[in-house]
Length: 65
Image 1: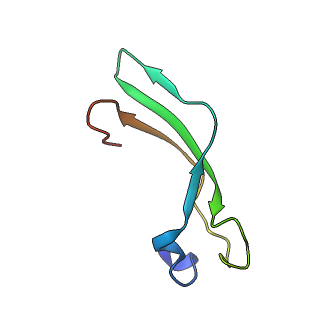
Image 2: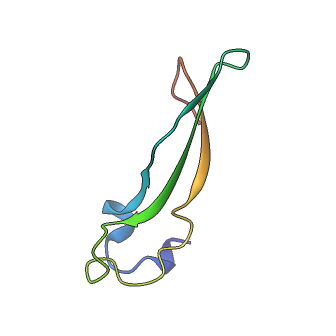
Image 3: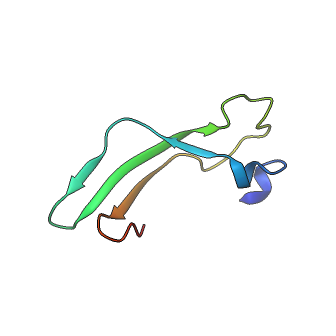
């Protein structure tokens, strides 16, 4: 929940995308993962910053998740 992110981190923080992306031509989807809450300096992002890691799928034409 947004309440677990202190201050304005819910506006400026998030999970960085890393490494490898995959494309499924049959579904026209791009898959990628996120992780490591940002900002990376823990003094600038206090709290546990829940739910910053996920696996996303986006339509390659529209960008819709």
